[in-house]
Length: 243
Image (cartoon, rainbow, N blue to C red; front, side):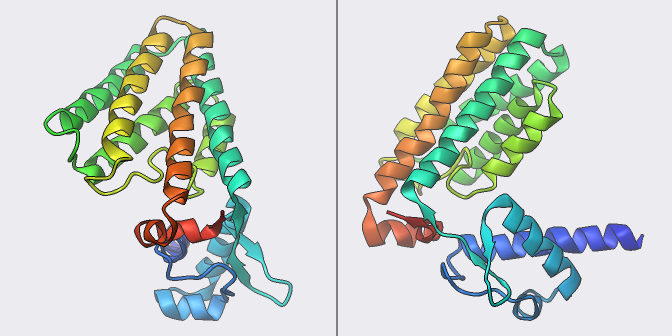
C-alpha cells in the first residue's frame, strides 16, 4: 500500500513540475529546489526528488552545479533533431508492425480512433475542438508505438514525446490559427495511409509515411518560431527553445 501511495505521489510530482515548466511559470535558467517545489506543489520532498531525477533523465531538466535543477535550454537544431528522432522511432515501429503483422483487435482499436478523429474534424475543420483532437491524436500515436510489439521502441517513443516540442500534437494552436486546419487534415490523411500500409504489410511504405508525418511537427515548430513574442504568449514552452 505504501509503495502504491509513493508511486502515485511521484506521478503527481512529475505532472506538477512538468506543468510549471510548460505553462511558463518557471523561467529557463531558474533554479528548482526540492524544498521550494515541495511547498509550491504541496507534495513531500521524496517524490519531488524522484520526479526531478526522472525529468532530468527525460532531458527536460539539468543539474545546477551549486545544487538543484533548472529547465534545460534547447537550440532550435536540438528541437528539430528530437522531432526527427521521433519520426525515426515511429517509422521503425510502423515498419516492424507491417513486417511482423498485427493482431486484428489492435487494428480494430486504432481504426476506431481514426474514425473518432474524422468525427472531430469533419463538422468544421477550421474550428475543431482541439482538446478532443489532441487527446485522440495522442491515443493514436500511443497505439501506433505498440503495434510493433517492441517494448524497447515503445519506451523510447514515450521518452522522446515527453519533450514539449516533440510530441505529436506540439504547436497546435487555438482555432483560427493558420497552423491548425491544414495540419489536421493532412495529419489525418497520413494517419489513414500509415494504417493502410501496416494492414497491407507494406513495411517500407509504412516507415516512410510515419517519418514524413513527424515532419509536420517540425514545420509547425519552424512556423511558430517566426511568431516572436506573440508565439511565446501562446506557447510558453517555446522559452525552452533558443531561436
